Length: 123
Image (cartoon, rainbow, N blue to C red; front, side, top):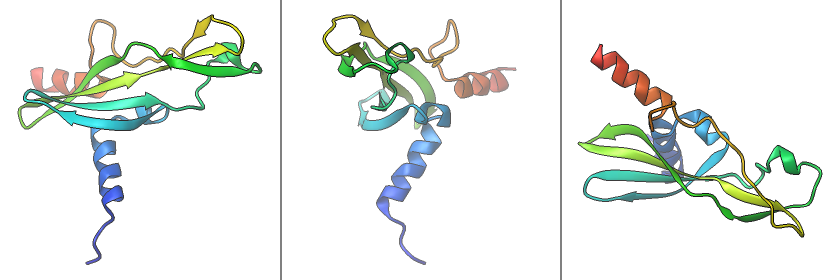
């Protein structure tokens, strides 16, 4: 049996832990572990310039505050997705723009998939 490439295995693990709808606009950047949780950092892709800046010279102006979203719990640890959206501005101005994503359920900081799982096991 041929040995799979490590990058292929890592891609499969990311697809297992991160809903595909998030991977459309974000890429995995870093994974860290502490005693109570895993954190998968996702960064907004560079080509996701806000619609308000279409046709203008847009420049990245850092990042918005991160958003943590509970996605799974394995090995008695929670797994959070830490989402970083880019902050943009039009060249020569100071007015900031960022994309808005429907990342969580109102009133909950979980992915839809995890919410559905909790509903299923909770009745």
